[in-house]
Image (cartoon, rainbow, N blue to C red; front, side, top):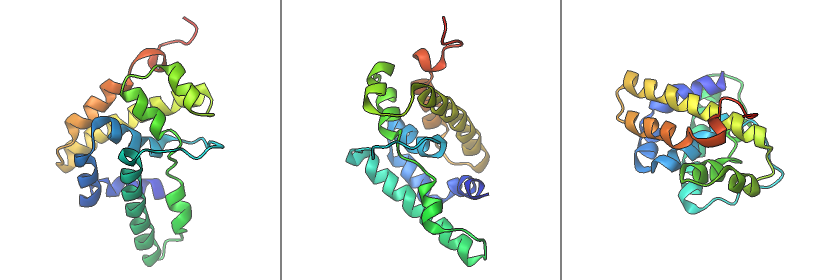
Length: 163
């Protein structure tokens, strides 16, 4: 339910402004927080170009949690905010900027298969964001489509890992 609420609020003017200001690689990195279901033993060391947008998104998530609480929906603010995991943000950002899969794996203790699964889920989310952009009339369709092009390459999207 809470994920659905956040997706609904993606049309929110503030979130729209965040995405408009970001480069495509930053947008993909920020959206990776929605699809990352793994937890790393290491906190990511995010650069300002990633930590700034993450802070903005977390503030929007806090706002949504407060509104839900005011509407008598049982939701814990910090639990809600913490479900958006930043552990692959730097990995996705580097992938979008052309890093090899080997380089990505050296940056994190998250398993290779989990990285691939998250990237595939991110590609699906980007496609949903393209459709949502069309439906609600925000001009981010091209940015999300470019994101699909940036991440859909190499071993991450190979038909089989045993080729």
